[in-house]
Image 1 (cartoon, rainbow, N blue to C red):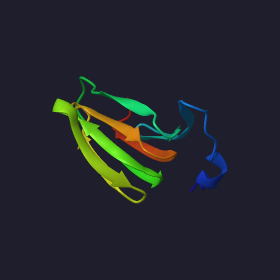
Image 2: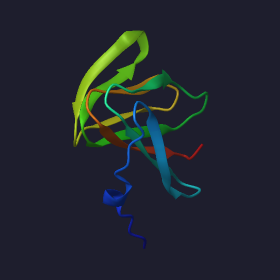
Image 3: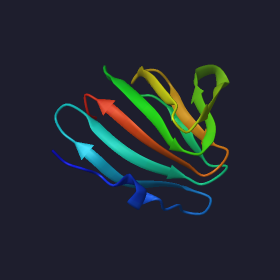
Image 4: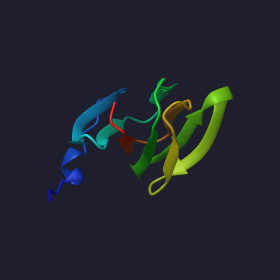
Length: 106
């Protein structure tokens, strides 16, 4: 077992997205912590692979983004689940911390 202290990764880069650290990587899944400053967008993108991902908001609020300019309001505690092939992204209204889980890892 392993414990990760996410409260120790509460750092932001002004006007940018900070890929703070790789939380976990195994043959089964990968978890990455991103911190987005207010107003920053993690651009909509997709991957030409089979699998699923989740984006969990652990702090802040904003929008989950998708194809055709889809914007879904989100706040701390919300989790987006989608196919890796489906376009996905995040726009932060306030400082926002997210955890992205990818299975299988890419």
